[in-house]
Length: 287
Image (cartoon, rainbow, N blue to C red; front, side):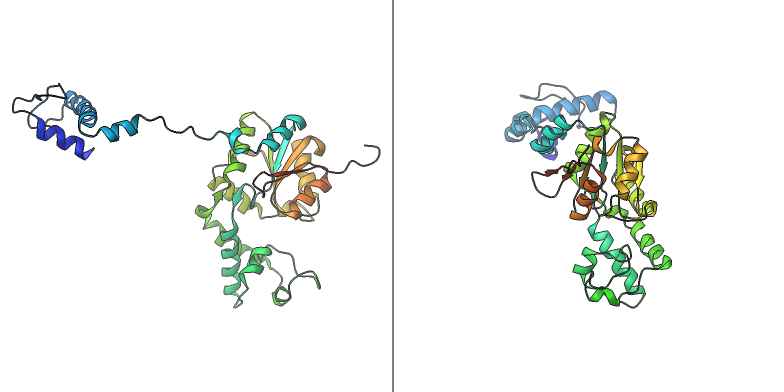
């Protein structure tokens, strides 16, 4: 733009004309009058100047922009085929790691809360079971370090939640999953979230990612007695959607979440692999 304007200014005659291109008239000196027609002349002049002085820029500008990927392009073909054949009446999405990447916020909030208590924890453990959202440890079922960690208290949970809510700007949508969710919502399909995370955290994360309006039902950890891999969250989500589990489709990114969806009777898409994979619950005798 600067080079184009320089070309116009340098090549303009004293009477306001140009010898060659662009063949237009304008005030002299150029751009010293702010009337609307001057802006129109300037815009045309820049266009012609770019054509004359900067052909490579103009040629590049005229190249058609690559087509933006559509929702259909982002969704693996196998999943599109499954959606077409299964024709779900509703879909239920996991939150952390499926719709949005919250791993950094979860670990940072847990680490900061433990630091306030004078404790430290290795990052691998925090990533696997981010305290204080993990249940109290049970002998033989958690790493040795975890058994030296105090069970979460209401105060520590509130502190961790407050820290998380100050960092919602770090929430990163998972592009392919959120693109599909938006596409499904545009078809008026009912959508729900079934999460093991705190409800305030889930709602704040969805809002930060611009997804809150897509989901009519949100089931969080405080709404169920048992967390994933138990089926409670999915059973409650489908009940609130008023759609039988077998007519719903779940989207998950963990083994526990997949097990929960299958136990509730939902087919489930594992969004971790590049091509995604489909899991279908076993059909019980008599069904």
